[in-house]
Length: 461
Ligand code: GDP
Image (tube, rainbow, N blue to C red; front, side, top):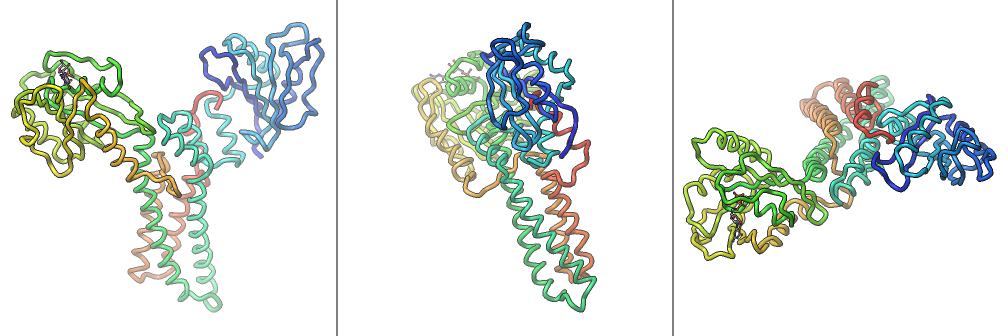
């Protein structure tokens, strides 16, 4: 067990709420709370002998006469707590001053203020969770959609960890066998080993490849699907966003070219998070300010998962519209044939549609076509791509990087085998793959990297 100071922090949000929770963790947490916890008559209320996972009602203060607050105290004994140490959680009234006073009282009695993420770091250092589970705590807090929530919960419950542990066990077995066979060729046959390692290397390669491919979807889950909206000025891009939002947050205007910068909106539809980016109208222009907007729009296009090209059905199809469609040609998406509530001037059939796009009749004014659009995007990105049976979606860039390193080692191993190189060369790649995978779960991680990971956490976590 990893022993250190007893630490404390306000675990709830800093905004006023009806209750706040102060979390204390470490060897002395019960003992310290004991000294400041009293019953209604002002008599000390001993906690030291109490069992784990019990709740105690009383009053908190420097002594039985100077009470700060009426509280509930939760006691969770090591190792059955968040940090795997003795943990006390004080539920007090929600005011900032009360919490501050209680924290001061705890500090006077030898507690240290916890650093951001220190509770979770202790859970990791004490071996209760691995690094992927620690990182999923952060994702869980920041989850912006049901899918993101589900994914981070599955990681918190060990889905990534279990997979990595399973792959590492296989590699370790191969390393051990190989070492033994090289040491004692008389009794342990290398001949048997070759087909086995060949099979394993293919299996590992496929598994890592699959995890990496899925991590593309992991980004969609965590950050949302990036949808860029393009179209010449006045086709209804801002109105479309407003229609989606059901509010007037995007600026709607009749003057062409006034949406000069890009506008980004995070929108949750059903269980999915979308990131809609409304660009300045892409069009050929001499105006310097507009040119900057157009360059930005092109940059956004390059990072898009999906493109929405807007065409105004109520006006003539212009060279600018064709320019927009041309710019978006390579990207998957839809053409929204907007303003169908107005008499059409441009017929739908006149619009060139590339193979990777579908055309949808739409009206930002009446909402017509919105359902079809949502269904299409959801099918494309969620229903056909994200399945929650046994699939693992790695969302974390650090984990992805180590996964790619492991894949590289396995690929090298496979090449070495196929090239008929001596068996002792296998060990290097096997060990490298083993270590790279170890980094994901925090088995072979340097202190400074762990520090960096936990610093991103909020206070009290
Ligand atoms: P943007 O420049 O592409 O962002 O276009 P806006 O969203 O500012 O829309 C330009 C004008 O078209 C505004 O007057 C909108 O009210 C109008 N407009 C947008 N969509 C529709 C629609 O579906 N039907 C009708 N009748 N008008 C629309």
